[in-house]
Image (tube, rainbow, N blue to C red; front, side, top):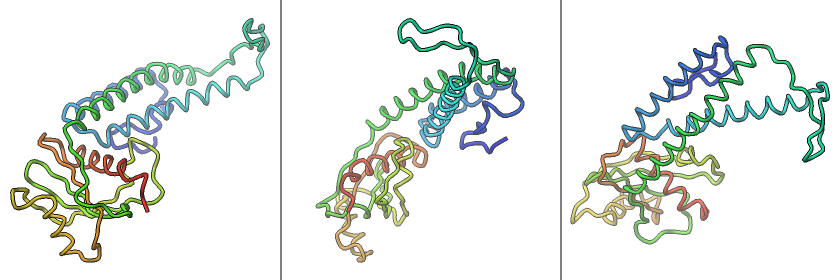
Length: 243
């Protein structure tokens, strides 16, 4: 059996031995319950990306099986009255392939609904996150500072974004590389602008860095939710102007 993904579902679970429908249903139920529990804790990643990956894999498997069946020469049973295309008898399948079809039939809708729940949750949580550039931004925004605030605590990260970006929306935050450098306490005399000035003083190799602030007063999990949302928001903002 192939390695499990981040949330524990084996990557080849739908077609690996043993081909047992009840076992597959149990595996999927355990997986969806685990992901739903993480969503209730407002933990988005890696769970949201894994749900999409699992759904996409099953959809691709379903398409491949249908394409293979269409290309097999089976007895002609008539013609489609609408298109005139020949209709052929469906190929005989061994029992394990029938079970895989049943797995695809019940698993794809469940994973699709779970993905919709996760995407809706991401939209709702993103509404509690504020994003803004700090100060005047340079033309080159592919590297600089990311300030992540939870309540009054602000963590400063050096960030870099590669010129070639990943197109997968659920994993786009992974293309933003960050390195923690310092923690600040936000206040009347310690604003984002002051933090940027201090970082420029401490790290003169970036004399005019792009700087972005992401903040929330909602108790979001930092690793599983706030940081991925912060990276996603920043990547979306700068992706059109990386120089």
